Every structure is written in C-alpha cells, then in structure tokens.
Image 1 (cartoon, rainbow, N blue to C red):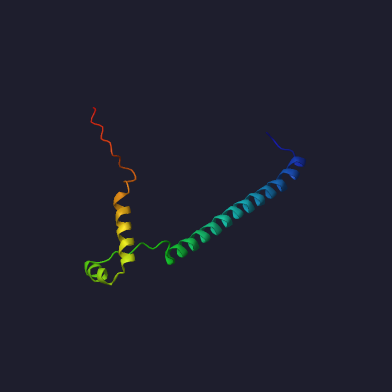
Image 2 (cartoon, rainbow, N blue to C red):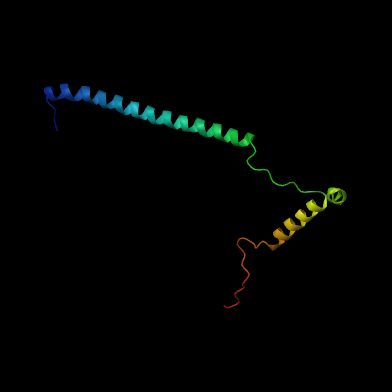
Length: 102
C-alpha cells in the first residue's frame, strides 16, 4: 500500500494526535493506580493503629480466687449463666451424627 503526498499530509498529523491521546490515557490510568495505592496504604495504617474489637480478657487463677469473695451474688449468678451458655453452645461446623457406613 503506497501513500501519495496528499494522504501523507493528513496521515502524519493524525498519527501525532493519536500518540498524544494514547499517552494521556496511559498517564490517567497510572494516576488512578497511584491514587488507589495511596488510599490503600492510608487504610492499612489506620487499621494497624486502631483496635477493631477487643476480646474479653482471661482471668488468671489468682485473680479468680481473689475475685470470688469480692463478687456480689448478682455478679456470681451472671457468671454462672455465662458459663452455662458457653457450655451449651454447639460447635459451628462439627456435627453430632457419625456415619459409619462405608
């Protein structure tokens, strides 16, 4: 395919325009990725520095022995209810039925 002089006068400037547009699009994509990376980094720093959920602290043996005499009867009954509820809870993924068939 050979190009004539008139066709080259139109084709060459359009090639430069297309190259500029492609470069701008590439820069826009890169800027978006950079912005997303910065936001992700900020979120990770925030998650590292904040406490999401605190677990109930476990008592040591000495704390529980000393604490029993200082607890009110209401606190003791609530603690017994909590212990009963924890023991009655079923395991989330283990079943109660065992299938012995081959």
